[in-house]
Amino acid sequence: MFPTSYPQLTLDSRGTTAFCLNKVEARYLHDHDIPNYFRHGITVRGGDTVFDVGANIGLFALSVYRQCGGDVRLFAFEPIPSIFKVLRLNASRLNPDRFKTFSIGLSREQKSLNFSYFPRLPSWSSAYVDGANLKIARTRFKLSLLADLEAGQLLPWLRLLPLPIRMVVLDAVVKWLSKIKHFDCKVRTLSEIIREQRIDRIDLLKVDVEGSELDVLMGIDKHDWQKIRQVVLEVEHFSERSQEVVALLVKQGFSRVKSEQFNDAQRATDLGMVYAFASR
Image 1 (spheres, rainbow, N blue to C red):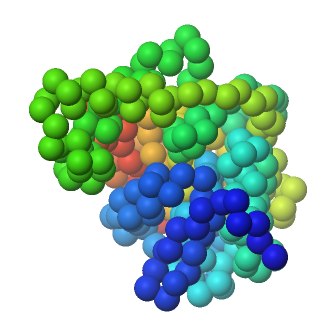
Image 2: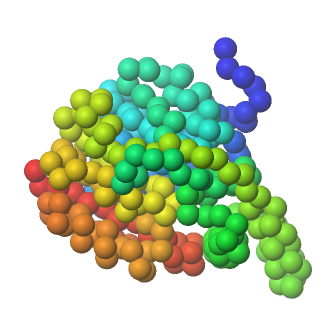
């Protein structure tokens, strides 16, 4: 029934699996990144409606589905065609009425955007990385890998090498990982989707879109903010943008907002998380 060309990642002790593009990256995301979305009281429960914006292959959505025992409405958005194929494949194993996938991105207006896709590191794909700033992206890759290396979370064999050789190897790894393909992808606003799908509430809005966070938030009409109970975002350029993100969420009625960078990899690459809760 399912093609065997994609590797599969085991998600839990019961043998639940997910298809993926890069098994090493998917394992890291599942074990280290997914838990970060549920800090500071972010919760999901049976009957919730959850939007997964920047769904990648669907590991966050699958985690929510398992936590809620399938009693959840999931809307997952992924604009990169190569990644979306795997997301749709993972979703197709579950209830299609409960887990809907969309081959689009979300932004502040409806249009077409050119996305850079990293086939060997899919989670870094972005509308804000291109040939002009690839050097900056490679530096961020390297800093992130160094932080994970020091924490013992990635490529532990590299620590056995003398430092000069280690850096040469790391540069080669980063160059190999950062091969780019380009896709023109459709983006729409979150409020368009709310109207189209007749959404009356969003219990959790998760956003991980590699630099497009504010674009997603600016695509929410004023009256639709009242439908959102919780928000969790990964924020790029955290030192510059986190205050603007927090201020926007406070303005839209979120009574408790928390922002943080909680590991060396995030601090090294200027990433961070924002968590927001509405009292409504």
